[in-house]
Image 1 (cartoon, rainbow, N blue to C red):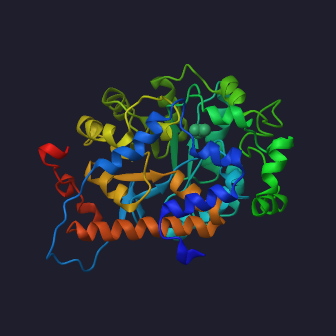
Image 2 (image 1 turned 45 degrees about the horizontal axis):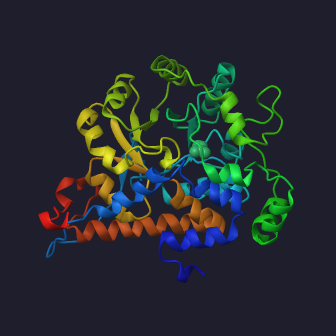
Amino acid sequence: MTKTITMIEDLRILAKARVPRMFYDYMESGSYTEGTFRANTDDFARIKLRQRVAVDMTNRTLASTMVGLPVSMPVAIAPTGLTGMQHADGEILAARAAAKAGIPFTLSTMSICSIEDVAKNMDRPFWFQLYVMRDRDFINRLIDRAKAAECSALVLTLDLQILGQRHKDIKNGLSAPPKPTVANMINLMTKPRWCLGMLGTRRRYFGNIVGHVTGVMDMRSLSSWIADQFDPRLSWDDVKRIRDRWGGKLILKGILDPEDARRAAETGAEALIVSNHGGRQLDGALSSIVSLPSIVSAVGDKIEVLMDGGIRSGQDVIKALAYGAHGVFIGRSFLYGLGAMGEQGVTLALDIIRKELDTTMALCGLRDVRDVDRTIIARTPEPFN
Ligand code: GLV
């Protein structure tokens, strides 16, 4: 099987066949018209690289750092909600694959496996992503739980105070676990591997939330829970308060505008992530890769600039680095692997991206990923651009 999987798109196709429709759709959706979701990948495809020849391509290295921590390549696993619904125990499996590959794994607040559960099943620290909710006690407890689990960075998401509508989630009646409706049962009958995995695990609810918030035992409707719980008043003062309580490395996720990037740099956070939430929030926003250069010029010497959105290959990674990202996050690219083949699929996705990045870097005439800069970008002559 793995011999026929040579690119991330192969994993997507397999994931589509194996993951129940509501969870595949949840992952593969953008908000509203999905224009920004598509722009994230389309804009990468428009960038052209300079081919260089007759340069020594031996002894190449992809090793770098992200927020000062060593990484085997400048790629981290992004926080994604409901990862444990793409495959049973998904967060633990993906965290293990990331640890083996020498890259960071970020656990979402909206994960199925809890912080404590992932920590218990890992011998390496991971990163934790935090949403700001109205219940400040719960937020404080989440921060303290992430500290107790020795998470090595906190990723604070700033672009989801309210939820951009994803049509398919409403039409599919998205919930974790799925409701036993006739339509769901018919769909689940075509996903025997997924069902078997789920029967073999007790991790089927939002592990960080159920049992930790008074009155919440079961979160049947994700969107109404977000509407009730997420804090639409989130401010830069809250960011500072969270920074002080956390006290460790802080990464601010969801910056798309140079003005906001300047505010983010003033908070003293280690890094920001140029992100439009995978095209899942403001439909009509610029793609992440198009937003990146202006943010790098606004704050690139004051805060580490990372990015996510649209990365489906090692070529995309090098393009982001060329435009000034210090590192990138992948969301869907690892989820395709997870849905397709569990831990092995995530490992495969990371291997694919690593090899593509390495070969592309060499063909651009470079041997050290830390040397990648704007000079590897080709200018398209007038009549063709
Ligand atoms: C949550 O992070 C989502 O985008 O659904």
